[in-house]
Amino acid sequence: MTPTTPRLAIIIGLILHIVPIAKSNEIIKDIEFAKIGDHSLKLDLHFPLNKKGSPLVVWIHGGGWYKGSKNDCKIDWLSKHGYSVASISYRLSQVAKFPAQIHDCKGAIRWLRANEEKYGYNCDRLVVAGASAGGYLATLLGTSHEVETLEGNIGGNLSHKSSVSAIIDFYGPTDFILRSRTQPQRANKVGSVVYNLLGGGADKKVKLAKLASPVTHVTKEDPPILIFHGDKDQTVLLDQSEAIRNAYSKNGLSVEMNILKGKKHGGVAFYSGKNKKKVLYCAGKWFYHNNTLNHDNVFEIDQYLYARLLNKRP
Image (cartoon, rainbow, N blue to C red; front, side):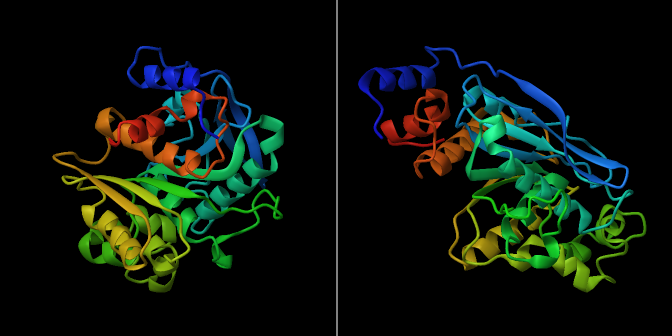
């Protein structure tokens, strides 16, 4: 469907900041999507003004798998551009060991699909994003759609898929075997984040470390990935993003890696300015190019159409 001339003018105006960007609308917090014993898994939904048919982006928080929460949603601003955003929780490593975390995330995806009609968003092409430990889970979620061991049955809704259509990974680890060599203090040492996640060092629990590594599962069927990483990151080394980029490239998959010069682990720069525009551009491309957007919501397609109209991209 091609936008009409008046609507096209509005879109161009939005991009050129002549027309203000829409404000986000409704936020529904603490929706339970699963319960394991006494432990409740919850998510928050951030809606745009026109939520009917809005494309859905799922956010997975970071925190080394032992801290952090869904309240730290670094991309909630997407709701101002026509996207619904679901910020999900998962069991932390002091509560349960791997693969509990990926089981929880996949349970959330299935729940979101099962409740699509109730809340009004569109799951036809669902994008998952996350930072650090959440970036890792987002990437594992995107690359392990046919790995039965990592599927789980959390929350039920097993008739619904847990697969996603695209991944946005902000500085997440992707290869625990590599990390056991280049960052043994974070992967092998007793009390380190990977040790606590796996229930042992990656150098000792090699089979589990491989299963838990997104690079292990990359196939030619995997969704496109957009990566952001700082070249001065000493928490998760740049080689972790390079590993998934290389695995994607070897399989002829769509991958874009953005290296932030002088940046460490996280910070405002990853989610603002040109990097924010890149997220908007890629989201628009993934959704709009595949004709699943609600074309009545001009805010959904502003960045992508702008890039197409002017034959450039962020």
